[in-house]
Image 1: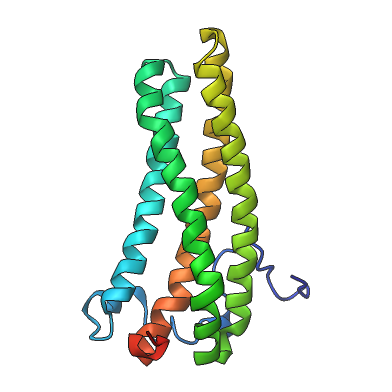
Image 2: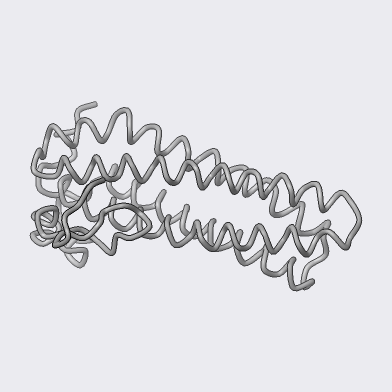
Length: 197
């Protein structure tokens, strides 16, 4: 996304939060008021819980791959724990973003046109994250092959997986935090009924 010298870049690799023009509602509804706000309904709570699950699972996957890299966990035990969880992580995050792009973002953009640029940025984030998911999938396949082969290949594959998960975790946290700061205040301001069925 183009930017001028006095405007910070909003791409996922450089963003450090929302600029002033996209903070109109997060400044009105900061995070500390969310838990007790009467408009924090079931959808908002579910959305936030899904985001927390993605953060926690990404962190747990990184910890597990670091343990494998350090030789602190047997390969078979690691494989039984890691492979199903990374598959869930990849598929659920992709599904979550697809629903947002095709349903929630268009509705929210129509509800709060002042934030339309922010929703465009979040959609661009999803493209970046999708690319990251593909690299995680590739690293996961390489790790699965290494686990089925000679033990001396496991360390390198685990290190590759850890590196990919570590970089992905940073991007994912930035995206989820910014998405919450854009969406939850809209829902608090308008009420969840404004999203329709």
